[in-house]
Image (cartoon, rainbow, N blue to C red; front, side, top):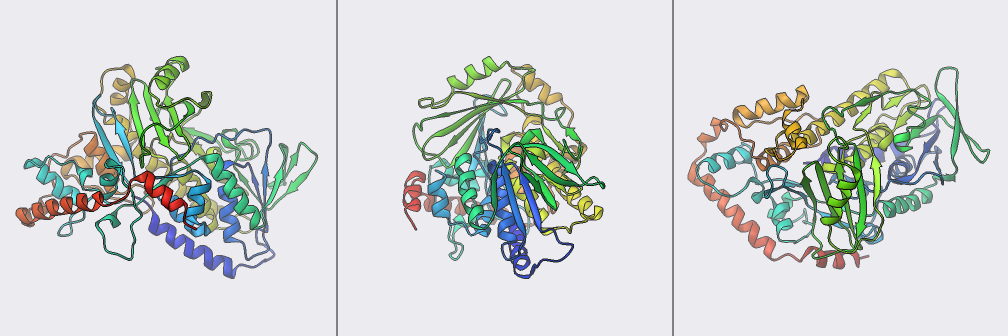
Length: 522
């Protein structure tokens, strides 16, 4: 599913850069990050790691007057690789952030009320005779196979049984096809990365930006704080959230709305005590006008509702949420407004937007932290000089546009393929416009079940197949080239693989037991 290979290459590049960078007259020697939280401190941590053998100065300005959103508690596997690049000890991270492990997302009531399906992390089955496993599975399905596509996923096999283990890549195992991410307390993660960044020399300033000065060429020169401080820099990174103080307020980068594709614009978040088993997956439960999330942490459960105020009031959404939570409520509900879309220019002049200041896609597939992480990684790979040449800016924006658009299309897929007709919201989802890029992908799939991935797509074909199969979207036929394979042999491979997978899973510890053992390691 993920871009782990790309991240590994990036990490190797960063190390090379850190070892060979030096101060040059035209280099960016003074980077100012405005805004803290997960976005600001992840950015600071990455740049501090990349530039820690140079004399570059990194300053983060964190306003005591701005509350951190702090609800993005579910992640996807590339973040694990990112933390490894930072040199973070995973046991310490899990312990200090109250993290649990995440193998998948369970979608309930999305296609029809009473049904559910899974979106796995990692592989499903394995290619047979050079053809995607999906093709062989779909042919077998037409011939009477009752197993779902994701039943052949190591991650889903563990998730269903509430089991967990980290596969050892040095040993051959059927579990090696599984990847994982974390659920964590976003505020504790920000604190963890604050400590990490400050230890690497990031200058942490507590202050509120009141005004911004610019050079004659339109670049940002400095920011003026409420306490009278003036902070100058060569390059500025906007992590001020939806306020977009620098990228929009100073640089005038416009926002492109995608509300016509994804109409959600409100959410509620609240926390409860844990109740029942600590499961290794996120739950997404559809309602007549939106969907509910349930995210288990070690010390509590994160709950929330995402909805559109055209179809539902705040009061009705809150009533539905509180009726569908387990455990004692620990916090008052927090309502958050948002607009789906992105900046037309994520990088403009000497200013880069990361996090909510760059755009927002609803948290259905837990991609917010990934987009922010990918944004700072790509910036570090393309680290400019003080002149910030437009060709570099254009290429960065082009690459990040593709990343955003591919994730946008994947999220739309969950809505436009629904069979639900029990409410105006779901009826409208069936009839809403979809982007040409998604329409073309679905048309290709409809023919013979084929899917292709571009180099910047986050989600691989197995992820698309999982959603399409879960929403009961079927191709007209399978790829006829798989008829070359011996049907009996293929069925034997599939049956033996499923048998071995289930036998292996039965020997694993429970998710909660694994966490307790793992977090005690040093």
